[in-house]
Length: 640
Image (cartoon, rainbow, N blue to C red; front, side, top):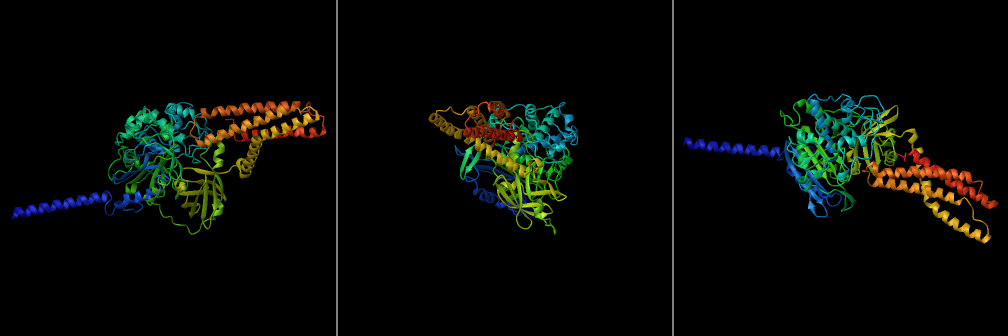
């Protein structure tokens, strides 16, 4: 009897133990009570995501890989749409995609590892860690620290060339890439946030110099291998890893509802800022390394204080405005949220983690600029914190105006392009702003003095959940929008100046496109009249025509140049340099023709009073139009 009672008791204990274990597993992996930070029950998470992406996959988005983790466990890993549309290959959890700028987080993790070991100081001038005179285009003497690089406020302009290529044969070493695409410093360190790919790759080069290893080898050994990331590489030439190449998705551009055009893969010399390749599940392992369980140590660092420091805010425009935490961008989630997005030529990605909840979401798409799932789904699962509105708010009209990105070229003809996509702020009812940018618009509600929260509009602006206007003495000094500042127009680029420039540009373009045809018609008319009246045709016309055709050549050359950059700005400078040389050559020819016209003008005037009145205008007008054209090319630096 006693033996039987003991047996029954042991069985009961085993059953209870099994039930508790199952309950605990259920709680940790999405069972009853488990939820995303936004409140979606984990038991219904897959159905929620399926329903969410159904609206976009195959219509607005070609393919996506979605992974979510909680408490150190993968709670969702699923592919949607196609990795290869032409061959109908579906996206799966082992589909390899390009990380884009999420790659930068590996650089900052490497920096923190070396800082932990005492091999670098985040407040040290990085010039002491670089070869002598490595940075040749600095404007200010103030030190550039590693924190400046992490906070994207070292002051670098946006250099648009030799950032990415469409062929692996063009890829150089990291050092060569940094020398080839070195930007000028146009802001004082620490003053302006201007997102910088160059600054991140410069930090990776410092990791390379301190560690004595090529950067991608350092990451492989000290980050990917410890985390078991076997299906990722910190390099852009995926052809070096055939087993990854076999599973890499093709990239696409949205061409209309349900239509997608294939794009190219991303190849980079400055690969640390956006060249990583890998699966979403591997990227989730990387995310989990920043959210160890209580009492446990991150596998990336030897001291718990290192991770705490890295996740501490290092810069923000205002207390309630999301800022940056040593390379992680903050997001206004229900709980403190941080992460990084990424874009390459034909891929878009996002990673967000909520350390307090030990929750992370990884979304990778094989489509350029995708935002519906990349940002929309992210927002749906991490939520957005409720803002407490202040009792007294300044008038919205105080921040009205147009602003140009601080992240822009400061030199060369590419400095024109940011002025074509300026940010416009307009009042929209009480405490509401309408933000317009590059054909997109969104509504933003003022919740604190000069702090605005996105409440609606295009999903493309979801990357900017909040904006903050820094106002001093009634004037806006800067508008901070998550990853960059937007600045007021300078007097030399004020709206009247820009409108005048646009009007003059339109005038000379129309003139030099139409003038050759007009001249041909007039020449035929004058030739017939000369035959009828038995007089000599007007002289000097060949020089004037040559000047017109030179202007037509200049206009055509620069229109083609602009269209090439608009269609694909991921180019080597060597690709556009011949057109710069054409500009210089045609300008020299125009100067010679103008000089020749001045010399021959009086000598060849026709004695007829009527033609005397016409002939000078046929010379003066082309010269004036050419002067306007050359002035525009100089103003926008189309000679460099």
